[in-house]
Image (tube, rainbow, N blue to C red; front, side):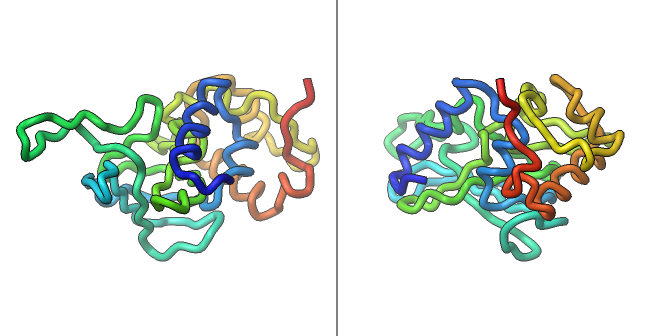
Amino acid sequence: MTTNSSVVETTQAESTLSGAPNIVDLIADSEKIITGAVKEVTDGFENGIPYTQVTIEVKETLRGEVGEEYTFRQFGLTQPRKMENGKVYIGTTPEGWSKYEVNEDAMFFLYKPASMTGLQTTTGLGQGKVMFKGGNAISQAGNEGLFENVDVNAGLLNDKDKRLLATKRGAVNAEGFKSFVRRAVNGKWIEGGKLRHAKN
């Protein structure tokens, strides 16, 4: 990944325009994958760059090394802010990027932080935050395209997996989703070619 943070952010934004990332992209491109509840959301500026800071109370770490809590900063404020000069700064989180609410329970797929700014976004932007509610799992992007163009070795799939992968959009079973991602990461399905993009 390039070290230029502005290029990283532009590339990530463009990836959503060229087609929604699927579950293969999310797992392959994430440095960290964790589940947990959003504990705190604040925003501010550092070196003139607006950020939203998110602290997650970690329930499970599927990839990466984190403690009981994980805090990261994403580009943009949570809402417009009146500045000391009387003007209103409107540099909020860009459209389509993940947004956060306290007590939100989710799985977070996270890119490697940008080396120059330390800012970090969810992989695939809104697709990379999969929320759990009422036994269902759904990304901020509505799971649009999340399970499309995906090939998995048939012997690895159970009935819940098959229902998951047949879903074109909308909510899926939360425990089934967690189990699929957990097994894919632990079993190194992508690295071993067992989980891959479907050939056209």
